[in-house]
Image (tube, rainbow, N blue to C red; front, side, top):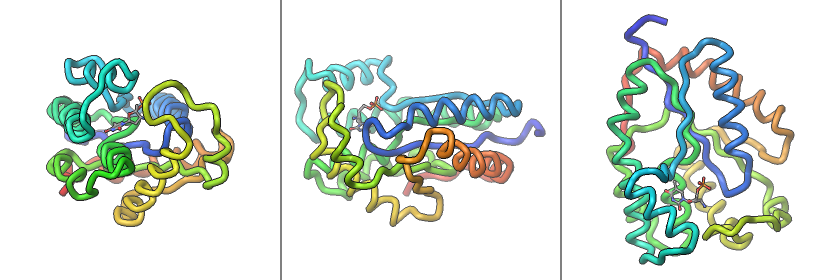
Amino acid sequence: MSLENRGAFIVFEGCDRIGKTTQCRLLVELLKSRDIPVLPMHFPERSSHIGQVINSYLTNSKDLPDEVIHLMFSANRWEHMNQIKQKLLEGNTLVVDRYSYSGVAYSAAKGLDFDWCYAPERGLLKPDAVFYLRAPADDLTNRGEYGKERYEKVEFQGRVAKVFDQICAKEANYWHQLDASQSAEDLHAQVADIAVKLVHRVATQDLDKLY
Ligand code: NYM
């Protein structure tokens, strides 16, 4: 690829324990094996000051009003935006585990207004593609083995899934809904097919913003 080619901005979304982390890893490994420059990222990015507050909240060592933590998650994306833009323009494809849509889905699932939740995300870079990993509803209720972090409850995850579905329907032109109940290998094959074509297709396109 020529020097002025940019990388693709790829995001994985979905409920907790749906397999995003595995799929991110498999995609990063695949792109590397094809000599496509690629970097993994994950939101929340817990190492910054804001990220540490988010971590304390998620591990239940700190309580904050729903609105405040919502804005912290958004601020955590904003504080990395210059870095993300620079990496993409340098030609790196970014494979990002969660983004703005998790921000909206988890807060709206608590009862906050959808449009209010989306507002602070406006102006952030828009992903070229979102892979939305979706398990059938009964599969979700069978997933008893959630961890200790906040939000990891079956009933709450069902509400989160509903908001993700709503966003998926609205953003259908760059969202790819994939069945997460299939094997990690089959799922990866579907992701890989779309992602490799995408990297080549967007290389000469301008970056877009969420609006
Ligand atoms: N989460 C994640 C939010 O509530 N809002 C956000 O903006 C983001 C990015 O954090 N249960 C929630 C979803 C997860 C939790 O994410 C931690 P992970 O991917 O398990 O580290």
